[in-house]
Length: 199
Ligand SMILES: C[S@@+](CC[C@H](N)C(=O)[O-])C[C@H]1O[C@@H](n2cnc3c(N)ncnc32)[C@H](O)[C@@H]1O
Image 1 (cartoon, rainbow, N blue to C red):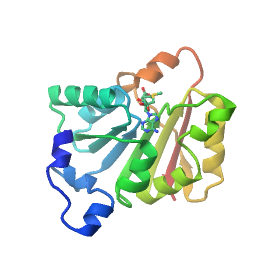
Image 2: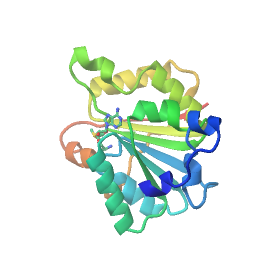
Image 3: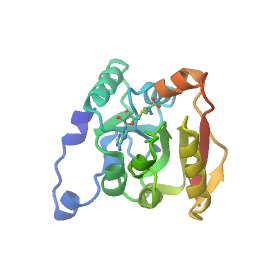
Image 4: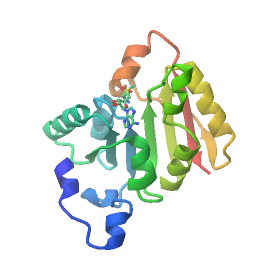
């Protein structure tokens, strides 16, 4: 999985400096590309990719051991529609993913940074929304879930104030595709879900 993405080196200056051709990493680049940002241990990514073999999936996480674990499981399950990147999420969306490349983002349980003095570390801010918008295909969707109500209210607010996104029905995975964090929190606290698409 990871190795596939490294096989072809950049040839031109533009290729060295520009976004990486993620769609070409798949056997069928023309298919939908869905991105699980902060995929963690990959419970959702693996189950969803198994159920949707005609869709390409890119899992992104900054923790190498999580990416390695997902990679091992994807290989064991023979899921050739998954590719993985070990990289910081904002950097990936802002610099590595090509414009219009992504049909759907799943951003489930992003770190909430609950202390007020740490709020600046949250993934969602104006620059991140710019990057999401640039990389989404026309009509492309973003699905977010969080157990942290203040973060959820902030997300509702920043998307409501941004006319580049329109609300769609929130989507959450069926039980067999739920993420590890969802399974942990679902019986303990309400889960906020938000869906938007690129206007
Ligand atoms: C709270 S866990 C949620 C994991 C998974 N989505 C789930 O619902 O079970 C957050 C995940 O995002 C990753 N993560 C947090 N901040 C990140 C960032 N800035 N860039 C990339 N990954 C990040 C963490 O390593 C972790 O795996």
